[in-house]
Image (cartoon, helix red, strand yellow):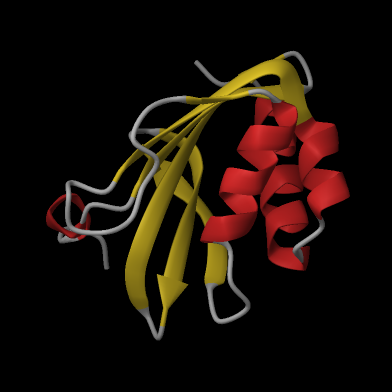
Length: 118
């Protein structure tokens, strides 16, 4: 269950992503952070887990482009980040927060899994 402080971390994460601030993104990541992405073989995604602050920040930077709109929305019942391009959902990001840091990032890019998002 997410705590109020976890919601604040998700909102700070979304703000840093929206601003394209690599430094702000890095400052929110736990030292042992891991990111897992799912492109379903249809879109480019990391082949395996991405580990560490620098590598995860780079992974996120490659995903974020200026033409994306980011919103904080419920993802699997918890706050997450939804990325849209021209009103179409292109990625859904779930986060696990530990303390005041993001400990894990799950990025769904697979178009088949994004069909129900509006």
